[in-house]
Length: 467
Image (cartoon, rainbow, N blue to C red):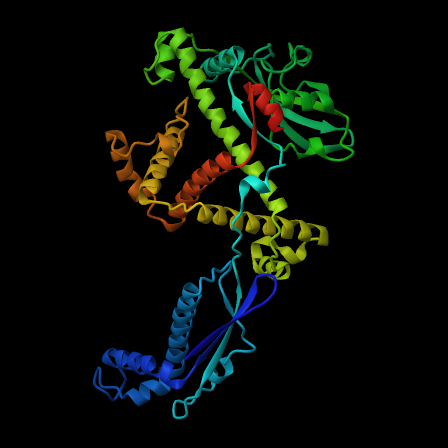
C-alpha cells in the first residue's frame, strides 16, 4: 500500500492511494467467510454454501464495499497524521481511479488498484485580531434604557396583557389592521398593522372616527417614519425600498382592535416579575435590569456580526470558487441553473462568504486554544430549555441568559438537564448547541482582542444606530 499527497493551488489537493492485492484480498476473504455462516441456497445446508460460489455471486459487491472501507480508513488516517484538515468531504476522481477494474475484477488474477481523491484543504491562518482590525472603527454600544423607555415598556405590557374588544370606530389608542394599495398597482395589497398609540399624532388623528372598510391616504415617507418608530408591522416591507416605489398609498381598514390596559398595581407587578417585585419602584428597577440585559445581548450580537463581516472582507482566502459553484448547482433546492447570471453570482458570493466566516471562526477558536466541554453543552441546553418553556407558556418577561449565568449545581437546573438530555439527543440539535457555545467564546475573544470604541446609548439611539 502506498499513499501520497500532491498540493495544488487555491487550497486544492490530490491524494493517491495505491493498493496491492495483499492489501485488500484478506478483508474480502474474511467478509466472505462471515457471509457463508448465514448464507442459504437451494442444494446446500445453511452455513455450508461454498465460498467460491459466494465469491462468484457477491464478490464484486463485497470488493466494492471493502475497498470503500479501506479508502475511508487509510485516507482519514493519512490526513490526520499529516495534519491536513478538509474544508469539504473528499471526492473520488472517477475518471482516474480504478473503478472500471473493479467492475471487471477477476478474483483469479487480482491486480493492483489505484484511487485518486480530490480534496479541498482548510487553510491555517493564525489571525491576529488586534492588528488586522486596528483601523476598522468598530463601536461597542452599552445600552442604558432611559426612564421614559422603561415607563413605555411597562405601559406596553399593561396594554399587551389587558382585555380586548373590537369597536366600530377608531380611537387614539387602538390597533388598526388593513392593507396598502397604490394607483400604479391596485391588485397588489401590502398588509400593515398600525399601533396608533405609538404613531405620529398627525397620522393617528386621520384615523379618528374611521370604520372598517373606510380608506385614507398615506405617503411613502410617513410610512417609513412610522416604521422607524416601531408603530407599524408590515407583512412584506420590501416595497418600501424598491426603486420607483409609489409616493402615495391608499390604506383600507379591515379591522379595529382596542386594548383595555391592566391596572398597574401590586398584583400586576408580582405576576410579571415572578413575585420579585410588588411595588412600582422595585418593578421599575426589575424591568430596567431586564431591558439592559436584553439589549446587551442584542448589542453584542450586532458587534459580533460587524467584526465577522470586517474579517471576511479583510482576510484573503483563495477559495476554489468554481468548485463551490458546482456544489451549489448540485443542490436541487437552490435551483441555481434557473437563476439569472446576476442572481447566480449573488448566491455564489453569499456562499463563499459563509465558508470564509466558518474558516475564520474555527481558526480564531484554534488559535486561542478553545475547547468546548460537555459542561458548556449542558449549560447551553439549560438556556435553550428555559427559552422554549418561556415561549410555550407565553412568559411575559424572558430571562436573557448566557453561558456564564448558568450554575449546573442549582436544583432547578438539575431538573432541566434531565429534560434537555432527552430533547437534545438528536445530532442536529446537539450541533446547534455546539455552535451556540462556539459563538459565546468567539464573542469573548473578539471583544477582548479587537480595538473598540465604547459608547453609551439609550434603546432608541441603539435602534437608530442598528438601522
